[in-house]
Image 1 (cartoon, rainbow, N blue to C red):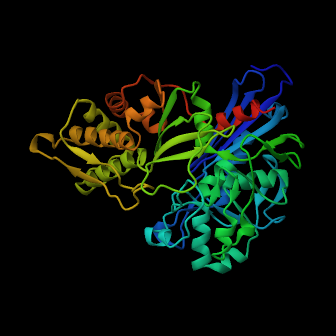
Image 2: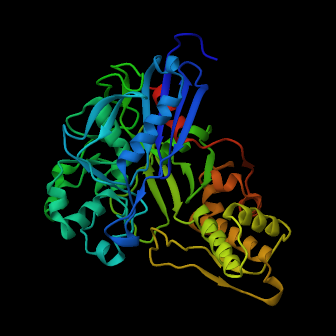
Image 3: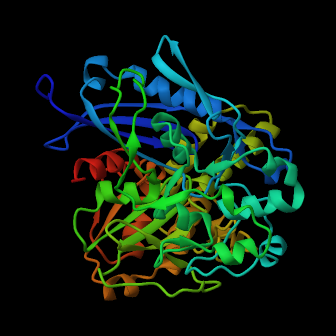
Length: 466
């Protein structure tokens, strides 16, 4: 336990379904407090099932509930705050009217005001036809549905009055930084800007000329800066955190997650939660090209200190298993038997563990892929001998891992100097079959139990800030 009055660093992560707050002791980096809350923020979209939107007020309430659950005497010792969150999502607000501050049971807190819903990274309103109609970015990253700039383009063409109502935009965590610091203009890290699209990571500038030529409202784009820099200071006391506390520019949750777990430059990190990512750090002198490579499965995300991560980011991870379990549960219900998803999940994994191998082949791309948006899931090589629940579940888990391997093969990892894989994420942690398939597919030692934690990573970045 830290000594009385010892400086602490607060890490916050604003995730897709939950938020988390951690306290780190400033000199050792030891976690001395942690709280998380589900946001339950999803709301219906006017776009129908393609639209994925969340209520910002519910997210902020969950975030401030997390802070209020931490010991007040520790919050008084917070000297820095690092914030991460979902990179691609977009929300809009009115400058100087984005929130109002109140005294509540959680202390001095802010409530969103004059804000839009958060359109999340899962949003799929921008179909392939729409995306191909957009101008080519001057960036090494392609633009996909759910990216901030693609979402703004969609509103520009389908609901321009919506955009005219607001004068600021950013990710949900950019919004939090702006509100607690009272910023006149939002600031966005290069990590988040690259994930919005139309941002050149070499020059660290938006593609202003390209966007203006299409009538894009460039005034909505935030100012940009480097991840790990200070964006401002808290403009007033916040949930017991002192006024004047340094707040870092909001960072990408993926980069912070990797930062929390990869201790060596030769580590690759495989994270399987709702989606799945496999990544490793590129050499210091690496620079990506200035134009996208359509169909390329590996993208290069800005990391820290001008370095890049090579990332195979799949949209198909634990969500595919969850869909499979829901399907089985529904089939059982239609036969007159009621059971919970949790019970069914445990049973299907138990069945798969009883089958060491299978001939069934499952292509798990139920949700497509950013590099192949029109791809679909499929099952093949079915024989009577492989029809058991165990065979099918084993094949599905194998398919998820083999899909990751096809995006970033072992030989490429070896050539890049990778020596081991850090395995993490909620889906991987609870699924012994996935672990077996990782070890079967990748010829590297796999280390488990080292949590990939974006909130911890965000705090660690601020601990090391000088």
